[in-house]
Length: 447
Ligand SMILES: Cc1cc2nc3c(=O)[nH]c(=O)nc-3n(C[C@H](O)[C@H](O)[C@H](O)COP(=O)(O)OP(=O)(O)OC[C@H]3O[C@@H](n4cnc5c(N)ncnc54)[C@H](O)[C@@H]3O)c2cc1C
Image (cartoon, rainbow, N blue to C red; front, side, top):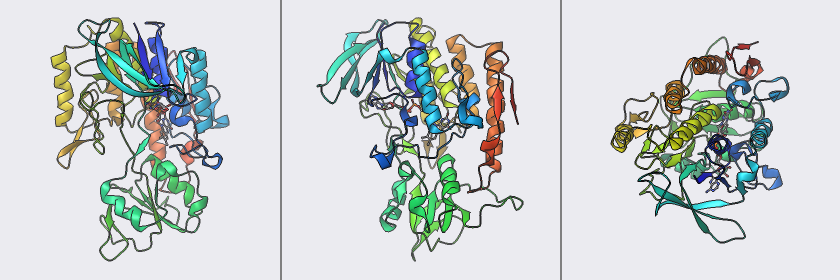
């Protein structure tokens, strides 16, 4: 069996490692010189470009929770359970080396086209997948694979809602959070951060000692706890609606903000697969939905094309690992342990209709403003999703339940600590130390 994995971030590495037992013929295509994906920090001061990691970033999940099940996170964080981006990158490279994935990698090789070929694959009635790739010094070449996993991530194309673009024009110096690297350029400014989730709240905390004033705008601004208020210069406001008629910025549920100097758009990223024809896979800009997929993973009609790592608001590395094991098991069984094409397509279609959101599997789309939004949000649905994948991988059982319960306990505990931090306030939750047995009963504790 010939396997292509596109991307050697955490997801691609997990797929390569877990598909290797099936076949030695695994090729890991990576556009950059090094593995690690988003965790490979690009230092703008050294002209390395930009990326979603900024200089001081620490994880918002504890390392023992983030770790792959088959590779513990050694001594992360030097006393903190929330490692720096350098430490996570070091961990991913140690995973690559421990499982000897480097020899499979074609670094500096960009995949430019993925299409179903007219040639058969090794699977009955499934065509081979033609992968075209190029390097800086060689012309594009096309190779055929029996199974192709796309693991190119979803933090490369910044998304700013079109209704907010006039703000960027009106307030020079405004930028998307992908370009944020530190607080110095914001000293003395009044900043509106649009989006109050992980990135927005971390940036608010980091810039509040330097900026004159910080507004953090979110459709559901957190309630202020009088016993634990935000810093005096930080204010939570409602959804940003655009330019106000008389100047300033219009926000829901309150008067316009009159004194904004610039905006930081912490408004997320779009899914983007420039190497796939929309006839094969649709991921329209602004739609936050990749289709048609079974279990957010397998192409619904041709499951030898796999889209790894799409779910978000999850514990990513172990989820990638479980996806990879499920795909490995299916490929090993010639996809006979997946339901038939009709059933897969019907489930993919239910996602299109939306079901109120929150579930695992394929049908997690939320219907809002008349369309399905954010189909790949899982949150609390991730545990059900992992169980579904474990069933497919043949790994369901008591051992897995112990692992999932332990993960869920740590995830909920760390999340509750994080939510106690007032907007822009000190990130005390990162001072909690988490420990967990790696394997066995996966018992965990914190202090
Ligand atoms: C700011 C930020 C903070 C985060 N914090 C946490 C955290 O605290 N804990 C946590 O667990 N997760 C966190 N995450 C989530 C993080 O994205 C995942 O942990 C994970 O690293 C994603 O891995 P990936 O492999 O799916 O994608 P990526 O890391 O984006 O890797 C994709 C790879 O594909 C390559 N590629 C892309 N296109 C091509 C092509 N055409 N050809 C060849 N190669 C290609 C890229 O070069 C890249 O190496 C955070 C994410 C962000 C953006």
